[in-house]
Image (cartoon, rainbow, N blue to C red; front, side, top):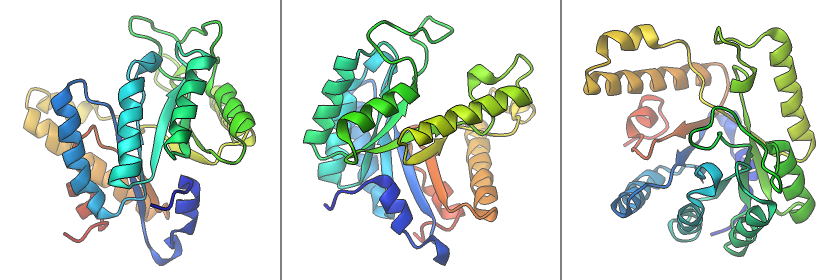
Length: 261
């Protein structure tokens, strides 16, 4: 397949003709059977002509080998442009460089640079000596080492980063502006693409009466996801990135007219 940066695929798509660019996120399953099941789902899902997919990276590089394996297979066998997560949490610069060299040798150009969640059992991110302190550091490092080869994405937070949100669930205007300023620094350092993190209106009230009914919760989740996509598209945004939770998303794609079958 012709390899290219994700940003180039998005920019070359005829969005002015109403075409929606959509992509999927997958995570490495915890069991071997889960990996094979994931590939089976991927084979069906990529038939819908998605633009790219990204593969997550466990906290502290806990899934590094499996993430690399899945990303390589998706890129070179399933033949879908692949973007791999990289996180700073408990990852030395040497380990990150090793991962970057592996993905380059496999023809993967795209990475999403993230600080990462705190390790299990910790409430807050703690900078470990010999590692990067934030996504900005990682973006600078990738761009300095690989120049224009890498397509770099970062996370953006419509409601502000969790660290900027107060106990009342809302970021102050000052905290929100600081978060935006930090996002701009990531862009200025060489970021090509911003992927928004999960965002949604308060859903506690809707979930409370159905919390013990798994099927009802699932149906509500599909409804909420579909309505969110419709609102986004109605506001002129033609790029949708769906966090699949490794489940097929045909229902959302069909509801928003992105697939015909």
